[in-house]
Length: 103
Image 1 (tube, rainbow, N blue to C red):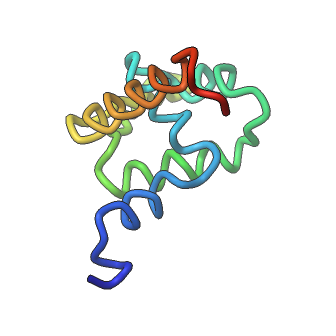
Image 2: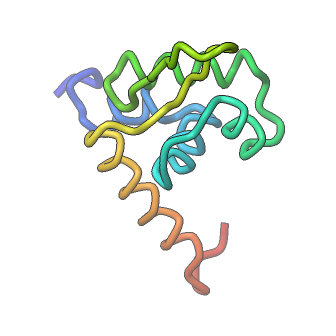
């Protein structure tokens, strides 16, 4: 199996950046607007957040809904596939919270 065929390699290619799992983790709790995500992720630059959201949308892990308000309102919601990945990240967080795990 080539690295491109390995499911773990493909997954890490998508979620291996510093901010992507955190964006998914926060969206797993529910729909958020851009500003809410930025406040929930102190230290992320606006460009990085926009890039991460665009990549996740392109890969079908979230949907972006634009409302015709003035100013325009945009909301981000995980797709069913994104929620499945969010469940995995919840499991990772549970594992990391166990007393015998030292990170």
